[in-house]
Image (cartoon, rainbow, N blue to C red; front, top):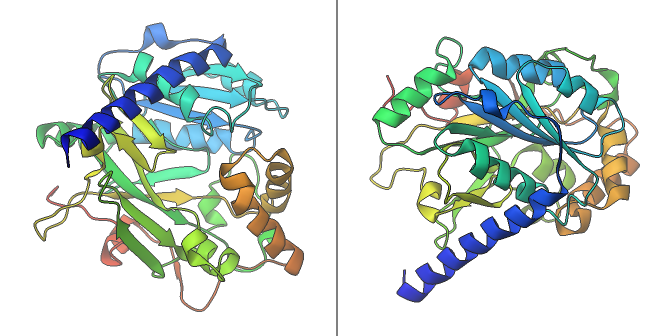
Length: 338
């Protein structure tokens, strides 16, 4: 990369950090427990809107993995989310009515919180419907993973977003608050993925799965990206460029081996497709606060219009068993973590 190109990337990073600082003025602290954060705490950062039904299981899942503190930005919820979060013993919550789109789809808000409170910590940045699985996650807490990554001088863990879905029509499987979503959405596509390298930012670009085949069959290249880097040892100079798909400095994106071997990676089980999917999609389509003018939600609405009983299951669907199954399928890797 030329000196000029490197300079442009540094300038872009600084502009994003400055923008995040300005946008943080839109946040109002509802409950701030950040003075209680300890030096070795693992932190989880979330931006959410009207996700009250998901929150109990989400919090318990990540507490059990080893998250010490949660930092939430609530973007105008009307379902009681703020009150619920503010009553939790390990959750700081900020509220804003400002535009999600104008805040780089929430990343400006999160970026400033990461810089102010996450620097020096292992930080997990996820949505309320994303659940991290990593090698040995059933028996080893996040602390074991991050300690090993520190010792191995690894600064970031990539995780492919794996869309989960039920067998049968989505609305035939009602979801209850506090329920494990993967009791319902226990199936996924074991193949049907494409991977490209972005040489400029060094990240991989992954697409495919049920969203590509069911909602973007006519143009799979327009399907949502599935590559994410959710777990990072945060430094004040870091910033997410596009959701959690890629970061600056760009060295954080090189989370794959170039010598023919494998590096450690995980998956984010994506609990999006339930009986609540149609109503949520319609709400977000009307708000028009999402990427590319809501193209993704327009595709969802079109598919739902075509079928009253949307069913993502097909004969090649795989039923989720464990992280080892995902490793066998080549969707994640334990690298050299034994």
